[in-house]
Image (tube, rainbow, N blue to C red; front, side, top):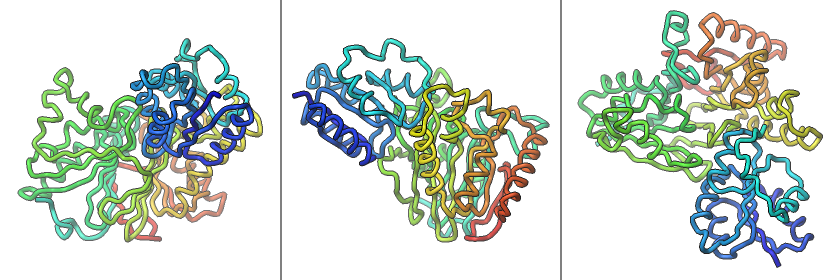
Length: 445
């Protein structure tokens, strides 16, 4: 009897597929996360693995690589990757990691069975589109949010971006004695200069949370001055990408071909933590993560502090807008509609009641028509998400490099009008460099 291993953190998916495979005569094993799945594969040696792409503890890319490295113990293994996202780069990366097939949810059990009994492989066309630290008392009193980089894709200095700023993603949060930095785009350079001046002569401990390792979110780290101070403690945390871990990715951009100082030459005490769970703490600050609809492994964070909450989702595209758009292609139907709505609702619940919401709003609705599947939202969807979640304050974020100050201001004006039609009291601003917001629960920014 042939056997299959189902690796998915969604018990409903496992239940449905397990029943269908068992009925078809397959012996079925299950695992609820990638790490458990790898061990189960080595123990049971199945003929096929059906693995979700985005899971806590160990993602599908890692599972594929780990199982292919055990080829001698798993001869002839067929791997099917499933995902709720349809990015072409994810499809390509899955095949490069060792997958044989790549299916976008919602999937039918018949599709799985057909692939399991087929001798063909989807690898022939991988590029096919898919649809001594500073004690807490030495930090300034009060919890504070400060923006250092608000632009997406590439820095855009110049006279037309002076008001909102041209640096790429970087946000500072000081809360409950912790110094937390969200992403290290080019804006982190100015933050680093400020910190060196503020803590001159005293060691500093900070945590850098990375949503993902696309260049506009890491390109400023080589210029982060506190990393060059010997007594400083820099903790870098995030989720592993499809091919390389955080340390390897940051080290590559600092290789001698690109930068004069290597990562391992930095004198500060830098530690890396590949996040495995979707909830953890930075000191007393509770941090939760959610996978975003963006190419590669990308997350958003929600940080709950003693005086309020902050959600940071700089790169995300509405599932329904992307998958159901007339130009997106691919099969449509009630199952797809229901699935997309459910995925969007998961984000709404993750954001429920948040005080400060920093959310991707790169395009307007007209621009989006030529950017379907790029992994970014139009601000109309960002407003709708914030309203549905009951956010207190919305910051439109990840401004497009082609948008000047006047264009961003017009987007803010229209976003406020949209909120007004729902009689909402939610305040809306476009994030801008240098903006400081006290983090006080229930207070308008």
